[in-house]
Image (cartoon, rainbow, N blue to C red; front, side, top):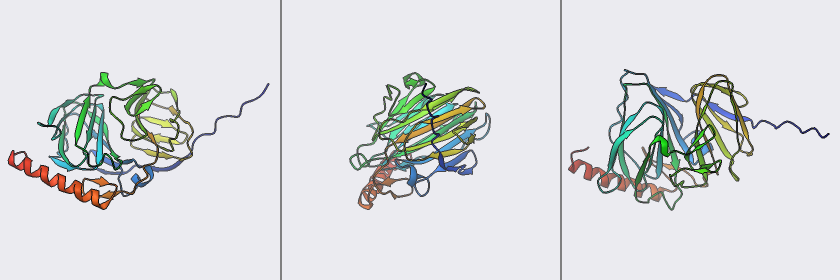
Length: 281
């Protein structure tokens, strides 16, 4: 009888706990880990205890990227300037906010501190064809987010399921919940070399130990990643094809060229004038 060799674990090549400012921990930004993980170029983990003062973001702009906010627990109010009249509402627990900033947009959010709030905000770099497109947003209720086993498909496709959000490139972004002692094997889609995971809360091995607040970057050779939990655990996982463009950054913007960045900044200023006329800025 032939004996099959055990699967070799895909190693972790970088890890970080980021830098915390109150309830927000910045795990990835375009000037550091974002260079390794692009098109995943920015990631914040946020956590606010019930009754604690939530952070105040105010209306602020973006261009050239898309933001995806995922709520593991709690809820948040949102407002943006997309479309003819903008969008506003409340994102519930398990919901997903997608805002493609394109050539300029303004938005804000307010975390509801009546219950504990825990989640992640991700920035995704856009290809040249989309970085200056018309801004748009999409807000998904929990029931509208497809599920592949323990993984919720927040963006892209996985396990035969596809998010209602149109992915800007060949990427997948998953929200995973595992109970203590469970194992899960992630098989990246064909061609994906970028892979990382960030722990919202809990404890797991993959194969090294990771705990609440850790982000791990996996070797870019492709291959499966195996997770085993030591406690009930929620984490997010990104996988994709490397973004082939340089990152040109402004205060709230990331583009593929200096010319595109300048056009995005001009779009932000134009929308700011409209907001001032409306008394919203």
